[in-house]
Every structure is written in structure tokens, then in C-alpha cells.
Image 1 (cartoon, rainbow, N blue to C red):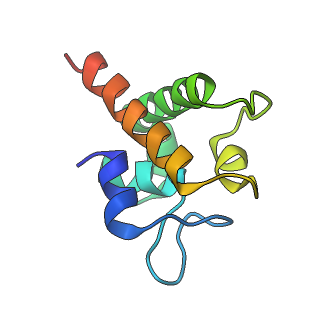
Image 2: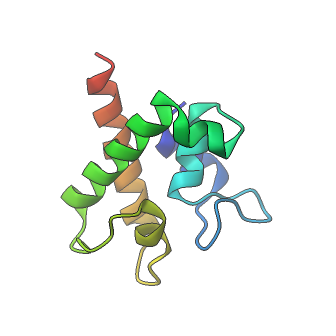
Length: 101
């Protein structure tokens, strides 16, 4: 499943990777979509690295908030909306699909 699917299914969260109700931030959705349970393993994995690059590319295309180099900072911006986050997740999924041929 993709990053967008995780956001749609679980709900969106700000401030932490995962909320008490199971909702997830953008990185949390990527982490869940990867199927890797350990955050350290995820950040060192090829999947995690590809997802991170795809998310950053999608943020740059979809956002006027260019100053965010860290996905979590962009996600946690108080002005951020669910629609913006979902749009970025969908674009990141498309980027990943193109990379995987």
C-alpha cells in the first residue's frame, strides 16, 4: 500500500509520528507504507531513503513553504492542511511508482 492510502485509512496527525487514535503524520504514513516496523531500520533502508526523497520532491512542487528541508517540519506547520498533506502523499506515491518502473 502507498503513503496516501495510509493517510486516508489511519487519518492525519501533527506533532508526533502517530497519534493515540492511530492517525499518522506524513512520515508516519511513509513508515507504515514501507512495512518496516523499526524507525531506525526504516531510516537506513533503501525504501525509507527513496520515500524521503520522493516526499521532499513532492513538497517542493506543492508548497510555497520552501524553507522546510525536513518532512516533519512541513507536516507540523500549524497552517498545514490535510488536503495539502494528502496531495503530497499522492505525488510521492507517483514518484515512487515511476522509479520502480
